[in-house]
Length: 285
Ligand code: C2E
Ligand code: MG
Ligand code: MG
Ligand code: MG
Image (cartoon, protein in one colour):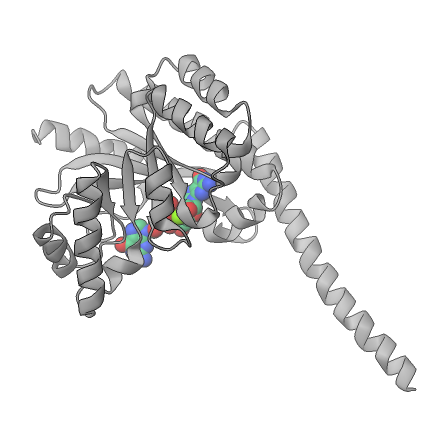
């Protein structure tokens, strides 16, 4: 009997596990189909404006992927990006986002001049693809764009390998004119090493530092020091996750000029961003 019970609980465990595995494999397969399909099958680009903290003028926008799943509703990238990162699917997924972002820029630049730069997130895994630079250049040429119109954000926590070929790849992207941003700065294991070794234009300070800014004196001191350090190193600085007026005011006080967060704008569908940008142009700012 004991043997039987053991077998049953094993089977139960086994079934639960394989159910979860089956779910994940199904999601992965659906993602794969979505990026192959013309309409994206529920995948959609959202844009979150970056603003000048002082006058709130639009200075750029970050492209954030959304997935309106046919049965499960909206699935957040926090869920499906890690899933895609477990396989090489992330490479194709990021390239899909990059191409779609180029298509938006192409559409818009015929309507409005002087569009702000779009920032696209790249998985660290992308940096290990030997054809990355050629692919990016080929793609912008296809859409008639300049590299300067795009910024590439690489997340610090995603472990950026400092191998020579990865550094060379980043340097070529930058030399080609793409702006390079280090995302979620301050949360990784080797933040300072990254600052020293990676060719970068912009550093985005992780929102955990901003969240504690008003309540934690130590967080405020750290943030102030970070902004000073980054400015002396001549990096552009963006503070992420600004949610309150008080945070914005304190950030402004310690010399941070650019920000992104729910206080200003939430991520929005591309068409909404376009309307917003059109209005800000006709309002003359
Ligand atoms: P991230 O690149 O650091 O993007 C910022 C995240 O913070 C976004 O979450 C955004 O919606 C959220 N956020 C912005 N302002 C605020 C705020 O004031 N408060 C709070 N609490 N959150 C704020 P989202 O869109 O869920 O994306 C999560 C992460 O998924 C991104 O973090 C990025 O690492 C990844 N991701 C999104 N799209 C892509 C993509 O196309 N490719 C890759 N590789 N990763 C992506
Ligand atoms: Mg980002
Ligand atoms: Mg991130
Ligand atoms: Mg971030």
